Length: 154
Length: 118
Image (cartoon, rainbow over all chains, first blue to last red; front, side, top):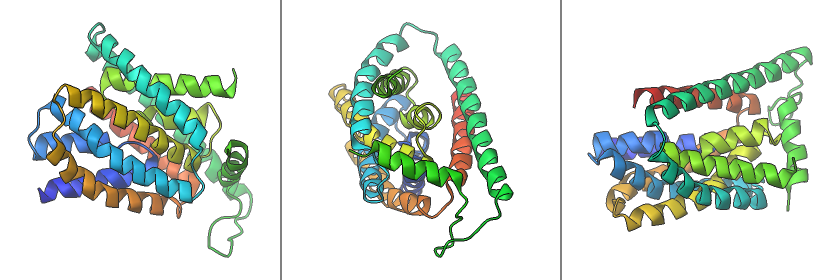
């Protein structure tokens, strides 16, 4: 029970930090520690995700990092897409799909690593000028963030 | 392609993939918002969480109807996780955006390994 709670805290931290539901940690906590079947663990992790995503989204909204309209569009269409995905799941070969999707995830990982490398390289090119709060004034992606805030605000 | 169409495609892709493979929408939504719609890291992860609230609520109702949701075990992991979410968002405001990209890349590699092993 304590192990499950600790894994819950870890799942919530990953969720808040990286904007995902945290199912990657909830599901093993529910199967390995709380001995649910895989099907019930996946369903139950969805319930656990609701309060986590809600509190994470509320905090991020206070920090000015949520575009509510965009989130609503993406969320509503996802909810519809889930039904289509469940229907397809029975018709398509799961193993091949999982391997294909794993390859896509690795491709996405390389894109994020390149993004990281580019941001670091441009930081090194400008001489870093620390702000009063200790953050780095030459962070290009921070600037992209703030312009997005203006463009994306309701 | 217009912005709204891109958002619609992002949502649909996230939903279909989570219904198909049982992995959450965030692993699809965050990359598409960042790499396709030009979002910054913080705004992409924040908006993704807002979308996940809707997705998880709908999916829980659906799964609950099939009797697959164990409410008490869900709360055992879900309530401590709320504290984790506060911690995670707090940390995120205090690290550079490129570090978020690096951590997200590591998460993607973890998800890929998980997909291959299970």
